[in-house]
Length: 145
Image (tube, rainbow, N blue to C red; front, top):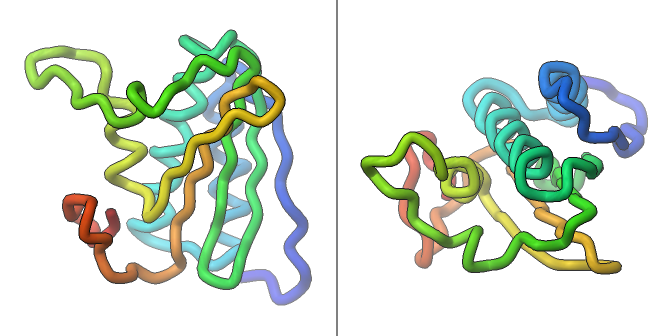
């Protein structure tokens, strides 16, 4: 883990999701995430970014920053069409698609949605260490909400 100041990470979302995953993984590891919590954040960011490419106008960006408890990653799309209904919709258990946002909500400790400047901003928070489960969220296998 880095001992100096960790500046925020800014990157565009492109079709090269592998490069995005690597950059976010390196940043989050330097910020103190490790193991399953790090893996879960990377899966969540990948799903949110893939959603931007497919449903969010195909353009957007990622901002990652450390806070006292862990890492925040903001995934922004230009279309601004992501709604709370999309975020909280249960996937069809017989379907092959539609699990991305459901996974994001299950893997991260906190997921917030807002629409600054007409864009959709999904804010994902992962604490360095698991905390208590929020009463309104089911428990995931890794102990996060």
